[in-house]
Image (cartoon, one colour):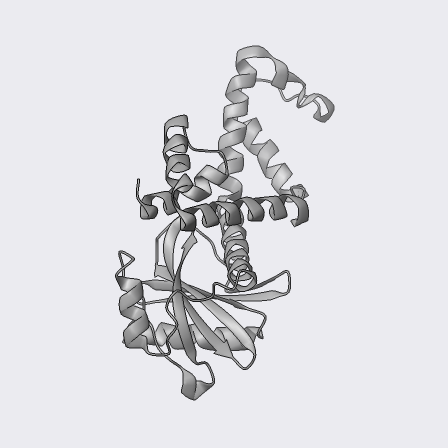
Length: 258
């Protein structure tokens, strides 16, 4: 196993979702690789922080009503409707409980997928930005020259991200790095705005999971702006104002369309 393969599996490994054979291969590689070991430790630390710091939200009443309606549609249509107080009592009833649980799991998964993935992506870009900032690993290639940053990233990815320096607009390029989003390698461009550092995660539209991503959001004091153009999408994240991030995303969208 090489570093590229290990890096793509480490997020899944950290979640305990790899089979025993793959887990053993990752562990064997990590023992002899300083970079991958550091990435494993970062993910373990992030997982611990998420469990201890991220708030838990109960499903809203509207979602609960939709789930109940879906379960009702999954039962035999000729079966009489039970009183509300007993609606859930038959879930413990043998084979029928198994089939209803399947309907329940399928519906919950499809009903909240778009909502959940959009939130997950925003949270992930914020976590990546925070980790890079706190770990002092903002750039793998430090340069304001797009002809240096772009080839460096393109050589390590299966796509070529749009890279531009916007110093004339007060948004100078300071470099780039390779990061991960949805468990896949992603180009990360690093810009400055006054004293603020801005990370911009860029990848082809359609990479990773299906999604319904908000145009802008605010998470734990960080602003996030999302946009897409010419087959590319990007997330800009920083403690700079949302109007600054929206401007940068617009500039990159124009660069991608050129």
